[in-house]
Image (tube, rainbow, N blue to C red; front, side, top):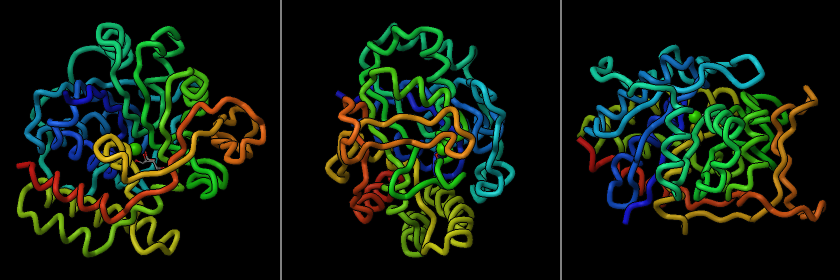
Length: 311
Ligand code: RIB
Ligand code: CA
């Protein structure tokens, strides 16, 4: 039976590729719904971009619910300098023809999780929607199978401040609620996503698929990779969010360690830092599988194969 998942996302080119990967894998993943959150770009655009991916994948059976338009406490910080004004620059796609589903994503999450205990949440952006749902009804934690999230960093430090990665930095209060919830967590931090770099050959493989999804993926990644290559001198751009979906499809491609992870929510210097007790110095109970190993070639082979299955 396919694993039932809800994807919470802020597309962003890397989110968009993660959505395509999930929507191209119906035998393994039942994408029950997509919920959108403000992050890389404002909510109206993350919602628009999600609708565009659902249409590109030919999966308009999957509802898209718009969620929180700003973090729980702190002001919204967006990242157009990475993703472009639209959030998915390079996709070269028309505006969506479909509309978001009625209702707020947080209301949907609470109702869907209560109605169908045992689902997996895949979070690809700030944790505002999930944190808000947990604040309103802490008890839903028992009905969530696990959360696989892209966020945080440890040995790799941060990408928004020296200490913090964007998704956690954007809404540390929401992240703190999630990491304290007791829900089984799998964290894909920068330590693993920085190993999953694009390259000319890997982007060309998407273009060589000859389908619309492959062309859009190649165009998005060509735009997306330039920021990290220029800023950090890397050989490509880190494909952060699709690691979350790939973990569900082929967990054996990944490795990590169960650790205690806490979120900095007070010091401005380290706000949003994921404090990973990698050496078990606090002897606190582990609350998270921290992933730091990936078969990056296997990851791109999986991605290319699955996106090749789309229209
Ligand atoms: O720091 C990387 C994360 O922030 C990714 O999820 C990217 O899409 C942005 O949301
Ligand atoms: Ca994201």
